[in-house]
Amino acid sequence: MNERGHVSRHLLGKELSLGEGAIRTLLKHLKMKGLIGATNSGTRLTEKGMTMFSGLLSSIPAETSIPKSSVTLSNFNYAVLLKQYGFAIKSGIEQRDAAIKIGATGATTLLFKDDKFVIPGTTKDDSLAKEPYLAKLLVKKLKPEDGDVIIIGSAIEDVRIAEFAAKNAALLTIVNHDVHV
Image (cartoon, rainbow, N blue to C red; front, top):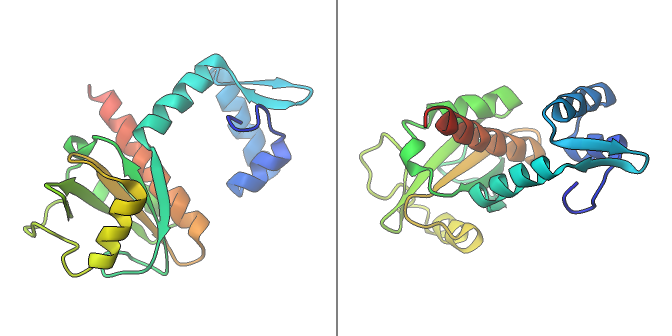
């Protein structure tokens, strides 16, 4: 909606891999929250919706698909950068559970600290030491800074499920932090 100004329910369903009924329900909830409006030309973001989208974009500014590695869980993997949320990560279990709810195999959470990637709860000071290609790829594509989090969603079926899983885990992290502030 942000890119096109307005979109049809059909296009939303196609983009989100959801059926018509699910799209109607989703749009109903977004409209009740005042995030979207409907016109003859389609659905558009309201000012409130644009503000929320802008906030999400600043919290999740980069994403990329990545290859299978020793820290991913399946053939299809998708990474999102979550800016300055390192403090909100405990063990990574919450992110894994959020990914599984989407239908993914799971998620791997990496903290970026002192120019290294660390899996929360491990004693390793560089969890990607044996994966230099992946570490370089993540730095090049996502450009993490100290205190950032990278969540990698993994799926057996296709990369879209991995993408939705990583994004759901990131959104859960944002929402849980906002609730506890």
